[in-house]
Length: 83
Image (cartoon, rainbow, N blue to C red; front, side):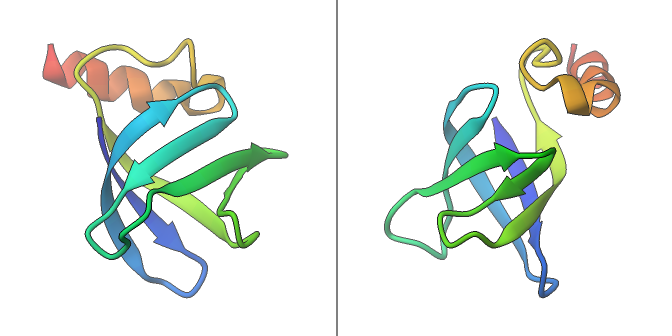
């Protein structure tokens, strides 16, 4: 699964999701040697440094809406477009 995330300062970063659960994501990006870990807190994805990020785009090969309830409309649209 690929994604684009936007940091509070406006930076946009593309990455590949390495692992995912309902409240955590580990992402590999070209900018970092180590994976980035995001944690969902009160409907906001936060980095390990407590920096909020917005998931701008999520491209998946299957329907992930059951895992990401707060993103259901976008995830369903992506899943339908891919299938």
